[in-house]
Length: 138
Image (cartoon, rainbow, N blue to C red; front, side, top):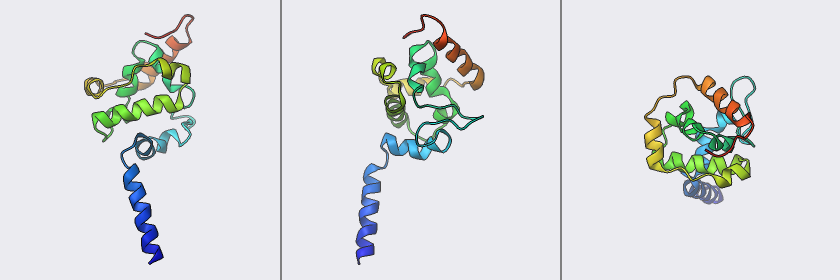
């Protein structure tokens, strides 16, 4: 009987948390980006301490929506907006995250429809913009 009660409590808590941005990150992102937002060397860049910097350069905001993991996610547009807002706030940097407008479902719908052809080159161009003198919010 204790096992049944414990199992019920576990599933009740799990279902209450299901669909939260943190759970969505665990289910849809951390396989590649790790629980701590770290990199998978040689294939997946780190999010931690960096992802919000994309919101400081022209094209960076759209990039986060258009990368295949986001654009092709099974999440609905509202859930993806919530996830990206959580991800930016969670992994920062905080100064950049705090200046960014939150993503909206309308914005997600728009940018998901625009395929990102060269992910690596687009990312490299955006990072170069971030590193250029005077880089700041678009």
